[in-house]
Each structure stands twice: as structure tokens, then as C-alpha cells.
Length: 413
Image (tube, rainbow, N blue to C red; front, side, top):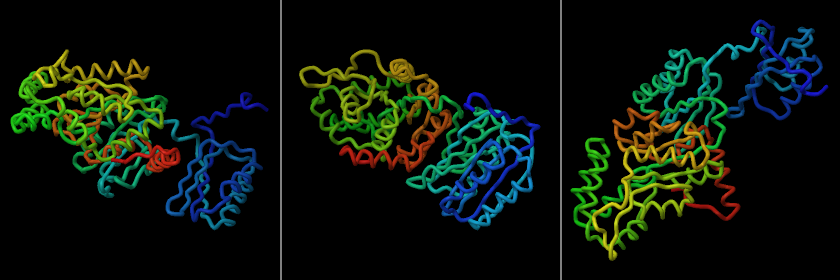
């Protein structure tokens, strides 16, 4: 019989049986179990298996066999052969069919304590959610776990868990659990104090003798206390007369955020595209984009005449609204839905971009930015964002090994 001739459907009133095996993990358990079950003409509805420190938990939900006693004896014999505990429970239907709302909840901690998880799971329950599955994504440089949650709307979970995460000192991301999660994604990143450590404009100002003045204005602008465009023009005006060769020196001295190269390399191998959207300067951003094989970038251009900075910007300023516009433009160029964009930034001028993205992440951001973003990441490792996207540490290491084998390894910083 072909697979298209019979599609089993289990209704909420149909009898089912859950068989659970627990004990020391051994080779051949599943093969023997399913071979025994095959003799009874039952259909598999669901399977879950977990191995933790050599301990196996295997659960199989099935339609009920006509010969219940013989079926139970058969599966218990499998347990006896392998030294496993066996539980056989009868019920009706597949309980998960009754739940609405599917979310992926990722929690990061460095370290992660049981008390924090107790508080977070209580919030999930309070929002009407049920945790269907828990998976560890990483244990270093952060501990990251993923929960698949049903029964609560993602928007409600986002609000509830963000508040609790701040109280518990952990990071959390809530994403809709559906087909779009597997589609191609676009990562749009701020540069200064996000992808790289420090602010380029302050590095240039140090050479002009206005480091303190520019740093004070930059800090106020990033907090949202000043209009970004006006503050940028006033800061750039102080750079008049700086030799453009200083930009080469600054580029060579840049330090990437820890884990930046790992994040970009790993996600690009998985089919993600990247864009840099910066209030900084094309003379620096273009070179970063080329070095990291970034797909798109947008930034401001410093005017240079006769080898010297004039203190002016060429063309329209990439400000708060401009960053959000760039995100939408690059998503269209990549033929990627805006729902499948991820924006990462730290300052007030990133807020529109973070709000426009499918997932906006405030990375080591100012408090007012953390409060308004979809989620926040407060550990110093940029590659921790990989885990917020549901990718495991093992997948990261596999990507690194593949690069090494191909002779394309790169530093992880």
C-alpha cells in the first residue's frame, strides 16, 4: 500500500497508549522496541527521546493494540532485556492537539541557576503555556536552553518573560514556532559598540584633540537625549583637518566583539545573509564588510578633500529612521521577509531598526534600549546570539571543524 492511501488521524476521543522506557542508555533499545511493536499493527503518533549523562528517556505514543495484555508483555520484555523501567499508560488522543500558540523560548545565563528557571517556567504557566520540550543548546561560553511552548500567544510570553528575565539576570528570546523559523534569514547589525568595541568617531576625535567633547555628545546621543543627526553633524565638524590616513590606522586597530567572527562565519554557513547598518562612516564600514564577507552595508560618508577631513558628511545621514529603512531595503534585495530579519544594536538610534525586525536584540545596550527591544543580550559574547536563534553549540563546532578542514579557519573573536 502506498503512503498516500492511508493517513492516520487521531481524534481527541480516540484511545491511545504511552510507552515510556527509562534507564541506562544502550545500543539497540529502539530497534528491539519497534520490532516488538510491529507485530501488533499499531500506529506511531509521537516519539520523544532524550539521553542525559548516559540516562535514556524514550517515550512513544501509539494507537492501542487489539491484544493489550500481549502488547504490554512484549514491551515489558524489552525493558527487562535492557534493564530499563517501563511505564504503560492509556488515555485518549494526542494532548498536544488541544493547545494553541506555539513558541520557541530561549533562555541564556552565565551562569544559569535553578531559581531563575523556576521563575521563568512559572511565568510560562501563568501565561497559559505548557512546556512540550526542553533542549540544551550550549553550556559555554553561556548556558543556553531552548523550550518549545504551546498554549500561550508569543506576544504575551514575550512581555511576561522579558520582565522576569530582567529580574533574574538572564536573557530570553521568544519567537513564533512555525515554518518561517526555518526560512532564510537576514541579520542586520549596528557596528560601533556592537560588532566592534568602541566608537570610531571617538577614535578619530582623539587624533583631532577633541576626544572628551565628542565622547560626551556620543554618550548623550546613544541614550536618546540628543537628536542623532544634529549631534553627528556637530561631532563631525570637530574632525575638520584630520588627515584621512588616520582612518587607515583606526581600521587596523579595530577590535571585534568577542565571538563576532564565530557568529558571522557559522550563520553564513547555515545560509544566513548579513548587513551592516551604521551611523558610522563608509571609509571604515566598507572595509569591515569586505573583510567579513558581509552582503550589504549602509553608513555615512565623511567628506575628504586633498587628503583631509572637511568636517562634513556627504549625502543624507543614516540616522535612527534611516537604519530601519535600510533594514527593509536590504530584506527586499535579499528577497527575505521582514519577519525573518534579526536586528542587533545597542543605542537609541537603533530602536526603529530593532522594532522593524522580526527579532530585535539589544546587545549590551543602554537601559532605555533594553526596555524597548524584543529581547536583550547582556553577556559580552556576540556569538551567544546563535543560541537565541535555536542553534546548538555542537552545530557551531561542526561549522568550525568544516572550516578547518577546508583550510578556511578564522579566529573566533
